[in-house]
Structures are given as C-alpha cells and as structure tokens.
Length: 541
Image 1 (cartoon, rainbow, N blue to C red):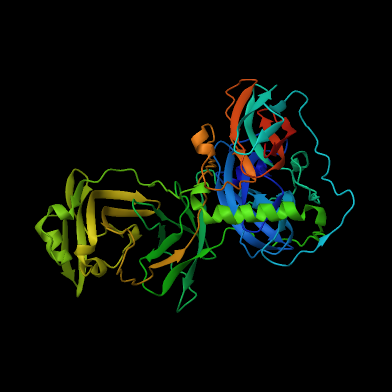
Image 2: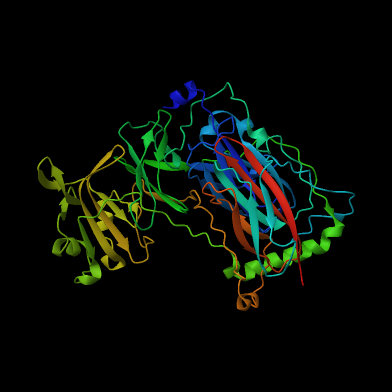
C-alpha cells in the first residue's frame, strides 16, 4: 500500500494554530491541527499528529494529538523552569517522515519565564507585531460591545462565512506585544510545499490509529528467532491487546486503535523466555536541523502587565478548579462480550486461585505439566468444544504467559473474572480463549513479572482538548470570590456552522483588563484559507 501512495505521488501536509504566540513559563499552549494535501485541500488521512517544542535543535516537549476528520486539538503544558527565549513549534505526521523535515510545519513562539531572572527588561522603540494578512474578503467578526467590564458575558458575531467550511476556530486572548520572527514555513499559505522528489516509503501512514514501534532485543544472542510473537497491551480496565509484525532488522510495529492518554504499556514476547524482550522506540524526531533564533528582549513599558499576568497564572494553579479539564479516557479496543462474568464477592472467597477456578468458574482448568501449572479453556474446534492450552490471560490488562503467576496470585485482590471461550485472533496470534482478571485497584498489585514481560511508561495520543471557562451570566456567579486570571478567554477549535453564513458565540471576560484580540481561522473544503481579527477592551468599570 505504501508503494501505491508513492506511485500516485500523494503527499500530506499539516497546519498548526495556537491560542497566542507569547506564553509565560507554566502556562498551557492550546493547539489546533489541520491536515491537507500539497494544494491546501483538506484531507482525512492520518489519525495522529506529532508536535514538538524545540529549542535550537533539541525537543523540550513532545505530544501526540488524535485527528478526527482531518483536524485535532491538544494542549502542551509548559514547565515552570523553561528558560526565556524564542522556541520552534514543529508539527508533522508519520507519513510526512517519508520525505524530510523541510515539509514539516513550523511556527515560532516566545516564552517568558517570570519566575527566573533570565530576562532583562529594556526600552525598545516601535516594537509591533507583523501585519496580519486577512485571507478572506467576506468573513468578518465583531463583538457586541467595544468595552466590557471584568467578569461580563459577551457575544461574538461571525458573518460572511462560506457554506463549505471544513473547519473553523475562534480564539480570544490578550493582545500581544512581542514581535515574532516568523519561520519560512509558518503561514498556512507557505505550507503549500511542492511535492518532493524523494520519498522513502519507510513509514506507513497512521490511518487506523497510532503505530507503536519497538525493537526485539536479545539479552544473550543477537540472532532473531523467526517464530517469536511480540505483543503489547495497555494496563487498566478493558482489553487493549495488540500483536506486532517483525521486520528483518528486528524492528516490530504494533498498529493500535482507540488507545489515548495511556501512561503505561506492557510488552511481552510469546514463544520466548527472558532471553528476548521488546523495547519501545520513541515515535518522535527529537533532534532537528538547528535554526538561529534571536534574543528575546522585553520592553520595560510592559513590566506591570507582565506582573499581573504572572500573578494571575499562579492563582490559576492555586485554584485548580478553575483549570480546564482534560481527562485521559481510553476505550477498550476489544468489543466482544464475555461468555461468563464472575464477581468474586458474590461467591465464597477462597484463598487460592486453584480453589477459585475449581469450585465455580466453568470452562477453565488448572493442571500440572512438567512441574508447571497450565491453564486450559474451552475453545471451538469445528462443531465441537474442547479444552485448549493456549489462552490469552490478562491481569488488569497485562498479558501473562507464565500460568504459574496466576496460579500463585492472591484471589482476594481480584474483583472480577471474565471468561471468553475461543478461539480469538489478534493479528498473527490465535488464542484458545481469554481469561481476564480485574483487581479492585486496577493497578496489578503484587504481580510477579517473569520471562519477557515488562511494563514501561508511555504517553499516547491526547484526547481532544476540552476548554471550559466560568459562566458569568448571573450576578451570583460574577460575585464569586475565586479569582479568574484567564488570559485566553475563548478557545473553540471546532466551531460548528452547519453551512450557515453567520454564527454567534458567547464568552466571558476574566479579572484581567486591557485589550483583547479575536482571531478567526479556518479553511474551506476547496482549500481557501480564512483569517480575520478584531479587538475589544476590558476595564474595571
């Protein structure tokens, strides 16, 4: 399939938008992503986008964002110890790695650390932002007032929208006064790079879900055994188990689906002992071609404004209920219903797993063979069922190949056991059935790791970011004693117009005063880019 894409000269491009371009260390960068072809026509292809915050040539932060219908939204939380300076935000997809970093999207941002004395306020003359080009001659945006009080409900009116909108975003944030040195590939129109002649074909696209890459490592020999069965799984509730495909160089790829926000991953090699393991490889580029960035100078005239914003940031962190929530929730990839479910508290609680499986769990059996305990499970063979000796055993989502581990596990830690009569096929693996044990804590406590099994940290693609704000539509809400230091008042990366030419959006001001910018960006289905800005003020009336 990858050769087909190369022969058709198909290429993918990506555009990245942020809620602003000046951030304080400790703030959150809100990110919107859109995929297109080289002619800027929106496409639905890759399911995952990669974003890296780069200083000079080295990535300081890295995130993956899930794409739906060719768009996605995520967040990047800046560490409080990040030094002051200009940084590069670089975005790409796995499929774009078949070309080179010249086709990656880049945007420069400024980060100011008000917690450290690593910036020097100086007086500058006429420092203004570059003129922003409006690519739309019809779209306009206005606020229902030009001056608002703090904690006041307002409304935006968008008019002249094309009926064929592909995606539209609206942002309200404090007006910025730091000049940004634009990257050669920072504007959307400049993202229309020509089709490159070089295309490696090494990276298959992630059009189903995130592709995790690992490497088979032999602890005693470098020889690769052909019948190894590498697999990964994601600890927690539900079955998220994926088998891998081994390449000649020992690399293995796992095509996953519906796994988001994961922080741990279990790897195992079936048909192998502790001599082999799977090490997960980072999907990011991490190192880029260096680019000289100027020194960030701060106009001393804005010192008081910076101080207010810094205090507001610290108050936001102090009152966590004011922070937008973005829970990590993954859906189980495996959708089949269990043949039997056993809630162990409804039965006599035995102290050994042998008693549990012998007394009331049907269709499974422990038996001793060659000095080891082996579990069997009912599986269909043609028109009949028989006991198969190769079940998939999961404890809190972690695959267990050594059945002695389950035999010796404390059943009082287990809340539920699901039994699935087989067979079941996962990639190239055929299991006679599934035995799924779930503990009360879902944290695989007291699990004995044997053979090639290991659990490592892994942060998967983010869920779509949900931006929430306080509601000041009532007097009681406006009088709340909880401080509101939001610098970004509105972040809606997916405005639904449904073919309408006008849209109204409510927003609420915060405790911060000054001038605020409204930015509307979007792209039509035929590749026309929209960008329009407007301004209003907030004062303590």
